[in-house]
Image (cartoon, rainbow, N blue to C red):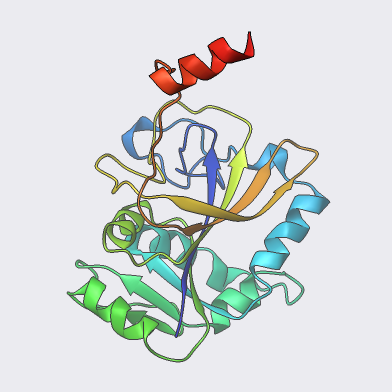
Length: 219
């Protein structure tokens, strides 16, 4: 069985748009592209290395695929920690508009993305690691396909932009399985789905007659 693991950068208010650079995704007039870079240091880089240290294939939406395909195949430094890995592994792509993919080892999931992913999850193989892909994430969450979130929360508020959980997200509980904090203020937290949302009530209630009697007898 394969797992779908969502590894994502978000601001404190849940925005995940264009973390890597000013020109990455200016959709909707987003003006803060590259907001993660001032917060990266050696320690946080090591945490990213841990995420990429387990065997995985990439699972991408069309827009993120196009951003990656325009960059990683052209990184020629053999010592780059990401490019050789991203270029060699399989990239599964959810897209209704693209008919061909130029980046090596890339495969389209077809018209029925949900069915294709359910089939992939039932096969043997490495985790399917999601990067970016905000629209695909909504489909994954809606169809109960996410097995784990690895969320890097950065200490800033962006106000508007593409969100990790968009409008109409399906309510659900999550279980924290690991958490780390870093000197630059970033929190890395791993969550797994944990059933429905549980609720309670802190409202004070009137004591019962038996409780009132018990209190009277103690006086």
